[in-house]
Amino acid sequence: MGFAKRKLAALDKCYSIAVLDWPQKNGFLVASEKEDACFLFSEEGRLLDTVWTSPGGVMSMEQVPGGKGDFLAVQRFYGPDNADEAQIVLAFPRDEGGWAVHTLCKAPYAHRIGILRRGGRAWLLVCCLKSSCAFPGDWRDPGACYAALLPEDPLALRTCAGLELRQAGKSLLQNHGFCKLRREGFDEGLVGCEEGTFLYTPPETPEGEWTIRQLCAVPSSDSILADLDGDGLEELGCISPFHGNGLTIYHTDDFGRYVPRWKLPLPEKETAFLHATWCCTLGGQPTWIVGWRGGTQGTITITWNAAAGDYQTEILEQLAGSANVMHYVNSSGADVIVAANREHDEIAMYTFTE
View 1 (cartoon, rainbow, N blue to C red):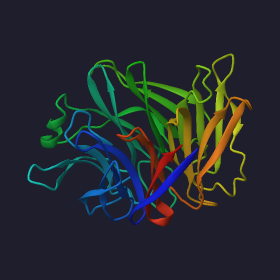
View 2 (view 1 turned 180 degrees about the vertical axis):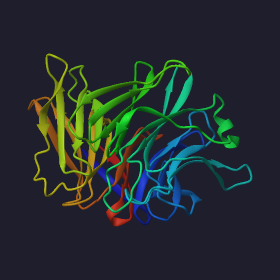
View 3 (view 1 turned 45 degrees about the vertical axis):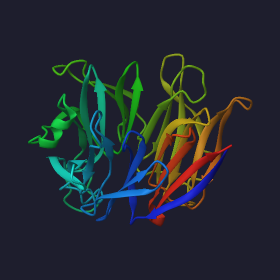
View 4 (view 1 turned 90 degrees about the vertical axis):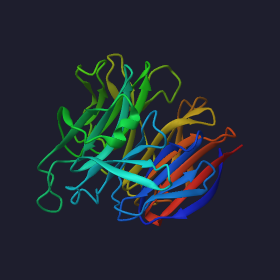
């Protein structure tokens, strides 16, 4: 598997990335975790616009389904000890040009967000890392996941007076990881935290309750759930612990419990601060893309090798220092990976070559 790399732009501590259809084709957003900009690129990697220049602290972004370039974002999260003013905002293109940014709600320590659709409605799930901070490294007050039902008309968010977040499930410490899944015709959210990995399923109706199931009790910074080996069963992949340097893939046993099957065969001192994670089909094969910010700062792909009966890794780039990665298929049918290589202030595009 080969990739051609392009450096698209420099952005101080680039961090968050997301797909944005603009217009009627794939584009993407990249934003800084510091006090800096959010950029919009075309699918070819051409800079189209600057959505905002500040504030930064952008941990997560997601397009509003059915909107016209509208997307939600976390702003003002400047680190685990400096996020009490974090908020959820809506950004949308103005008819006359430029962008409007509208605050929907305060969400202290909000780290990840996801829009989950079920039964014709969309829910916002907000994952908060903790709830307060009195001194550096204060983890005494766990965070939680909070939910809000979004308006049926996605454009109604533009004039919405605000969203009311309600806690879904119990409190969770170091509630860092989030992965959206599409299964059985609706969306679910996979949440990684100190207590393990939890699957959040939205209600079937606006009046219903969330279903929350713990899949694993091993502390997780981020988790994925996918059938990587093609046996018809989903494997659980976990980065552990919080901002950790261990990566394990779990298979289910005869009782449906997740047990460790494979561990990343690299010295943990080399894989410090595992952080970037994206699961997709790459070159026709289920693939987990993973990157780390410390040690050798590598970005790799993990796939199943049927002949060997085991997982294999391939280096996408060394010394990348990626905070987040994302995959999409462009209009020409080529696989593309976009990376926020935070440790080098670099927005990078990797296009698959046969």
